[in-house]
Length: 278
Image (cartoon, rainbow, N blue to C red):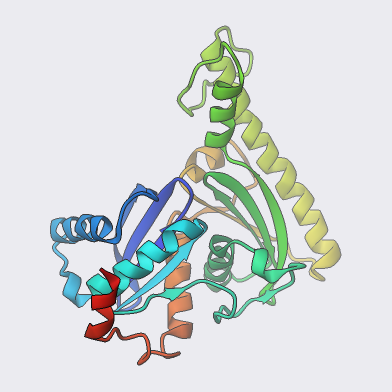
């Protein structure tokens, strides 16, 4: 089995693959203060609850946009699974041609999403990840990653309203059903949710136009949305074709298959190395 980690700023999603198929997944809060042992015990409980055995994990792959947690997860992989994890970082095989000015600056989650989306839906593509940040990525039919847009996510915007104003409260992120609202909470919900929907529609329309200009293809791009808030935003827009919640985990599995033979023997942990970890 393969254990995949998709670690964002707010949440971490774990997935277990068997023979290339996702059989279990869990979502937890990203916590920089947890040690490798604390994460190990938590994963042990999740496995036990799902009827899985940690001894069956043959390899680990990690994608994270939180550099401070990477060492902890690498330590976890070595101590609890006896493997040095494959990490999504510059130099890993993805099958994409990255056309960013500096490819090293592209977030690993954006690359993983692009790999999965192109494998599943071909191209051209616009991929929207609605997480802590809302990211938009453009990919051509020939698997060229052209770049995209990064905007504050819904939760960031909501927190900013609460923290930077004297009288506005925290609100639940849900649709109020109207934009002419008669109380503060619904007015905030309307601005946050419908404002985000409007942003998504505008950026997607602009990206479609630019893809035709610079992507060299007249085919209509397919728009794929993922992330925790994808379903809610998709319901209020007409521009999203597919909501794929497991896109990032599936991308990790695809990248793993491209890289699993590389340095496989060197990634096995010698028992002597484990003694230096504690």
